[in-house]
Length: 133
Image (tube, rainbow, N blue to C red):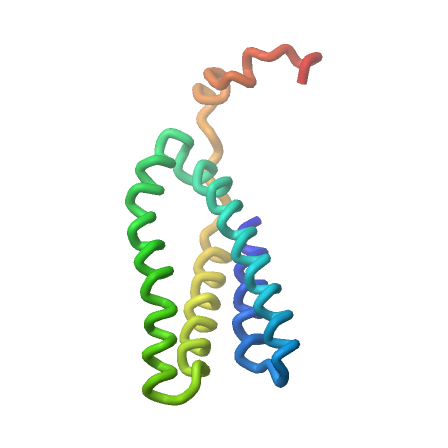
């Protein structure tokens, strides 16, 4: 499901890059923001499918610093590019290619492994009678 939001984010980045007017750039930025918000939420739903619920704290602990570093350095890089070239376009092209690469990587990732039967039986939902579900 998260693979649906990455093409939207890539499209939003390209639309910002190619926007002929301020209004179109503003709409593309809103489009990109909605996709980014969806990706943040879905990431928290997809990771347990691939790695299990017990691994989420470890995964977030290891990935968090890299995410924060990217969020902090991305705008600084774009500002540096603008100062040196007079345009944000080279930075936006790089961001679009990074987003496209992420999209392709997730599309080839495949389906998550099936949960072991022992975990299904131990889940709290297994204790709820079928009529109550």
